[in-house]
Length: 264
Figure 1: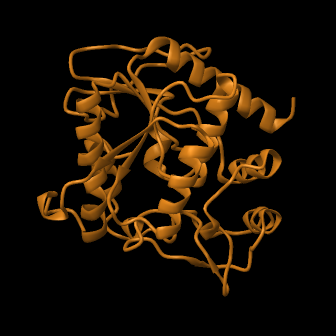
Figure 2: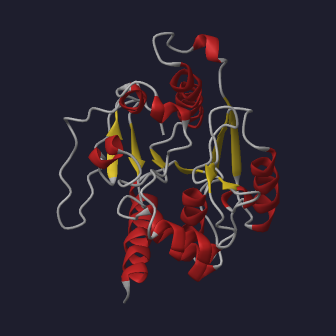
């Protein structure tokens, strides 16, 4: 087995463990590269179909290309899509910086969906290498009844044994891509032929490395117009993956405050 085979096998195992232990279970679908890889892995894990719903927590501010992708691949992949709206930014914590306050809408929207569908498990496509706070996550990460993440009280995970503590109102976040790196995602996309939103590929000297809301996400300078070009670029770049995310250029603790409160 090569490196990608090992990552794939680990993720398939995690997805099957989540499906066995947590019901009701749903997968977050942000329409980005990581969540598309997750759906692909779930199809591999469960004989070509995704056996649980996928959820899009919709801020109403995604790029038009992302909504078109969602509509097309919901049908092509035969997905059970759950849509949820987000409250207005005026209802969010006014002490947060502007971009983080806008992003907080997703936290509230996700909490509403979890409560509405009484979910015990939520599969999310985060990776440890993407942002420092995410490096503190477990594969199976408990969230309290108020959806909060207690960073200092996470269960140990030895020998791929994942705890699923359960109390009324709590749920487990499951992270099958936690050990993947950005370049692993792209190499896997290339190997498997996984469809992506074309905003990831350069046009007129710019492309998006990370996709979020259109009003708080910016492109980077790049001429990487193909999968091979993107992989070559990532092998040498020193620019952060989230360099185009406005939230990451605000106060240092803004992202962690969101994560603790239940952010994706």
